[in-house]
Every structure is written in structure tokens, then in C-alpha cells.
Image (tube, rainbow, N blue to C red; front, side, top):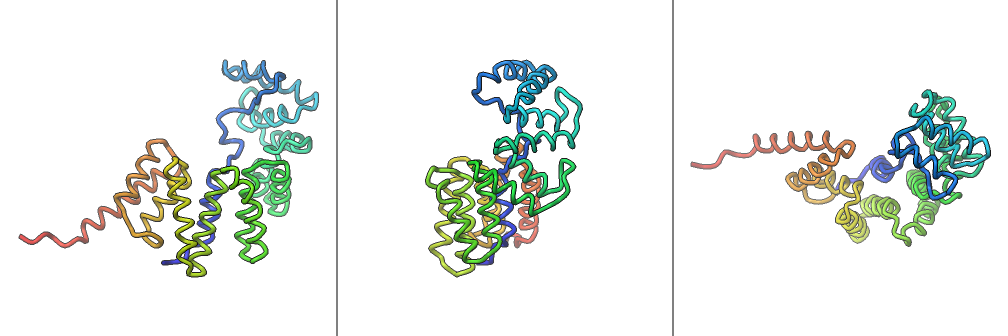
Length: 270
């Protein structure tokens, strides 16, 4: 078996991390103060929603500031202004809204939303969001610890994931599975590799998209499990139908591999 690159572990584990710009709509929650906002959003009246959020935000509501930041980021109900959006996320995060701190971590980690790329600052915001109970941030931190590759950092990463795994968090279970496969390959421990593969298969059977992508990738490569291009194609095709990012490209690549194998196969004897 070949060694999985740690970069693959990071990419697959963090593939479901949600950035605000990818959200379908601003979060409204169950707070009665957001009843009007929810009505306006459902009616696609983003200008009225923004105005209502602005009132709540000026009154110090952290969630309103977050949603106001989102609308400002995407330019719905107000002029698109990433610099102002960053400021609003900052205000929301300062008031203790964990999702805002997670978005700030992504912004500083990638140098987006007019924020300068600053890995130290990104990690600080990630830790803040994790400490405030945002699970995505906790999983991302765990993956960062695994990437450091020391015994101590691995222990810290596992400690981060353990509470989430116990409550059935798919993202955490998937990150742990990829960690198991990576460490199993490194230590030539078949049992640990199998444990990781079984976890991924189980998540895939439940429709968890990152696990399905991981399964298809492994079947396509054939470096961890036996190569099975038709089975990989089935998974990629199903994901492509749901417009899962990168699945259409993967489907095209697997079709090319199958075609090349067909050309290389010996002609049947007459």
C-alpha cells in the first residue's frame, strides 16, 4: 500500500467546512426577534430583511450582525462590500457569535474578504470558534494538529475529535477515519487501516458526501483498496447528478481512465 499524502487528509477532512458565501441564506434561528427577517427572506425581500437586521445589529444582536455581514458580502439587500462585511463579521464575533469567528478564520486563512492572509490570526479565530462550541472549527483544528505530525499534536487532535465522535458528528468521524488510514499506512498496521476504511464505508452508506468522494478516490487510485474503476464511476456519477463540487471533473477523469484501459486491453482471440 502506498502512503496517503497528509494534504489529502486535510483536503478531505475539511471539504465540508462552510464559508458564509456558500450558505443558501442567512441564518435566522428560532429567536422571535427574527420573525420579520424570516418573513422578508422567504418573500425574497432582502432590502427589507437587511433594514430589519440593521436595527437588531445596532441594538447589539450578534446573530443579526452576522446575517447582515452575509448579505453585505453577497450584495443582497444592500451594496456588495467585502470590507464592510469583514467589519460586521468582526463585530458579530466580538459579541460571541461562533460562526462569525469561523468565517473570520477562513478569511484570514485564505486572504479573502479584503483580509490580509495571516495564518496566526486565522488559527486564533478558529480556536475561538471552537471554544464557543462550533463543531466545524473544532474538526478543522484537529486536522491542523494532525498535519503537524508529532505525537503530542496527534494527541491534541484526537482529544478535539473525541467528544464530537461520541455524539455522532460525521465530519469528526470522517477526519478520524482518514487519520487512522494515514497512521496505519505509516506504521504498517493493517488493523488501523481497516478501522479507518470501515468508518468511511459506513459514512458512505449513510450518504455522507466527503466519505463517498473518499471511497471513489480510493477505488479510482487503487493504492489503498483494489482498483475498481466502474464502481468509482458509479459514485462519481451519482455525486455529479447532485452537482457536488469536483465530482463532474472526477467523472470525466474516470471515463478517460476507463477508455484508456479499454484501448490497452488485448483484443479477443478469434
